[in-house]
Amino acid sequence: MLSALLEERALPPLRAREELLEILQREIYGRMPAAPESEEFTVETKVIWRFCAGKAVCDRVTARCVVNGRPFTFPFLVTVPTAPGPHPFFIHLNFRQDNPDRYMPTEELIDAGFAVLSVCYEDVSSDNDDFTDGLAGLLFDGGVRGPEDPGKIALWAWSAHRILDYAQTRADQLDLRRAAVCGHSRLGKTALLAAATDTRFAFAYSNDSGCSGAALARGTTGETVRDICERFPFWFCENYKQYVDNEAAMPFDQHFLLAAIAPRCALVGSAAADDWADPVSEFLCCCAAAPAFPGGFPCPDRLPGEDEAILDGRIGYHCRPGLHYFSRTDWQRLIEFIRRHS
Ligand code: GTR
Image (cartoon, rainbow, N blue to C red):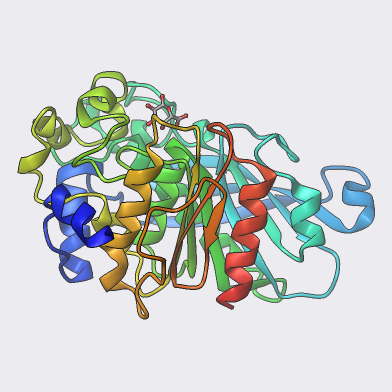
């Protein structure tokens, strides 16, 4: 049954990882900015008093980067269990600085034995078409972009790489073989790109990322390339616009993004009532990416139920009832996925 559904989508075949990354950057996200010329981190420790009843310490870290000869700084929070490590950890691209946050149940993560490093995405670059502020301001002369210059998703993904640089300085507490990057919606798209372009990440998790994230564009019943390019053209490179109402001409589809994470582990999460992100197109994207992952995607030959988790393969998928939201159920399944593959 699934092979017939996939055939209807008429997807371009997968290629070697380097080619996937070349196409994805050229056609959709733009070229990832280079690593900074230099970077250092300043740490203010124990910024939340008695955090998690003493089970964890929360530090506020400032990344101090030099990009194109000019300084660029951004803050992030690092919450690490006080129990002896090293601990598996999440780099969570989030919408707010709050810790905990409605999308980040920090104490539960700590109780599960995980550390979490979280960044508020707009501390890196604004979520709008202004390419003169934040990191964008150091990359583009006068804010004008060429066709392959990065959109905001690539800039946010770059910040995850910097936070991972920092994690490497705390290898005694953070288990670098179990580094995960995760995010919800636009930041789920960002998490996938961050993992695709940096093999230091062992795990990627996209929550309800939908169009231009984990959902196939061809045949979608949710958000289309036109929808997203009309509202959020600045998330992508200029080249992406040529595929508005023209998905059949794309030399890629979103299974390229998942496949570029292989042979490392990727988990895609959907919400059953999130029609805009299109759970079926997210599931079929995992099926289409399967050949890139050792062991493939071990799933039944049918569409998943609205409360089902398929976690045994290095590409995994789960759907839960409810709306577009990064819920505790999503975190619990992500934790289970990482445990199974550690
Ligand atoms: C929507 C957008 C989606 C998704 C979402 C979000 O409006 O159309 O692609 O990214 O925003 O990030 O919350």
